Length: 171
View 1 (cartoon, one colour):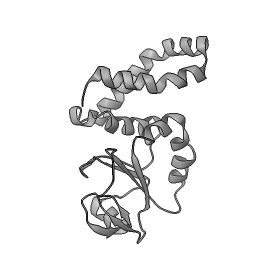
View 2 (view 1 turned 90 degrees about the vertical axis):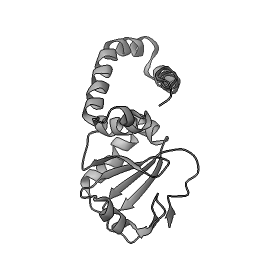
View 3 (view 1 turned 135 degrees about the vertical axis):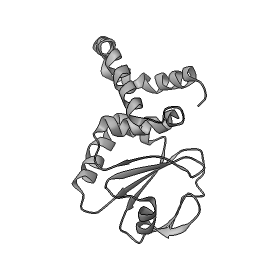
View 4 (view 1 turned 30 degrees about the vertical axis):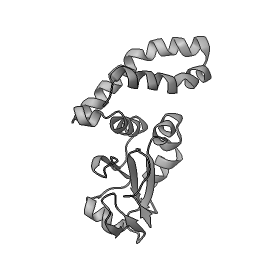
């Protein structure tokens, strides 16, 4: 069984609840999660994919022995794909349900990773601020990409993220 209560490290836990025949689940994995931005965010999570109707044994973050089907019902998962995110303590901190575009999936992951959910309880406001920030830098970023090349810009993104973390201070 998956032992979610005994995870080493300090990464948040992302549980994807899906089902076998699910076009939106296929698109999530075939496109959205394969994008470089998504992949970089996912590396900062412990990720578990569960078929929401299965009898797969699972130990929940709270230590309860159950199955994927029972746990998804207990969590109230009603749509697929659903992403349920837990902090290191095993508390659910955020979830998305049903199909979302890549910007919103990436925003949800960043919302948790940045700790913004603690300060800004409105995900929609977080998304709006993120969109406005991206719009404001788009012309500058386009000039930089044109001047130095996309690969060079991608190479420094991890450094820029670390600078932002240090600038924002502890969460």
